[in-house]
Length: 287
Image (cartoon, rainbow, N blue to C red):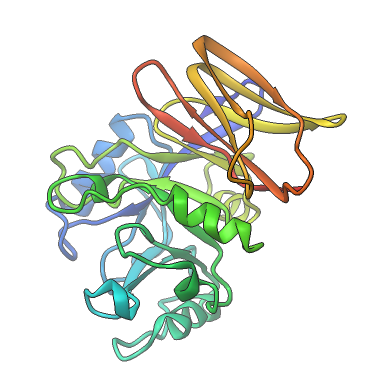
């Protein structure tokens, strides 16, 4: 458990983890111990087509999880990977289902449906917008920046969706497979009363978290301004549907930046980078 800048309890969570139950290179027990040793409070085990239920194991909270895929490998045709989090039973999903059917199956099992690594999958906004019930998406996916993937950052897709009025909660996670650099890097910091599966799942469903690789970041409205409060960082950037505005701040040890929205801005989100190049992202705040 951590305490944030506003003295609120936060829990460090990775929502996308693979083990030897599918194509991960560590056993579930090894993976859980590794994340616990790196200060994580909870992990979702999301093996491909293998559902893991809520549990407490190896001194860490295990959130139920699974990852489904459909659409093959050609981004032109629509490649979708959907992660199910917090299901209370195994979703009734089959490999013949499309993305919408998989989302519906996750919801029917009481879970949250996360659109995984849209940048790696080359998902376009035209492919994503018809999907109903997406509960969140990954703005950053660690393993998608390594080896042969090299498309970890979905910021452009998130802002193209935001320009069209679609605002998803934004998750950073590892999608751990190799355990050679894709582990214990990206996470969400969840505001909750405790690290129980019930409390964490409820807070994640409410979007009560920020995504990070290390820095802390919060976005608040104060009068006619929006204020970013951060741990010391090198840059603070306000992002919106407008393509140009004076909204980037750079310096040493920045801990605050203020921005007054321009006419026509329909949402704001903040991305920060610290002196070591580690980043953090707020969720989108509609204006």
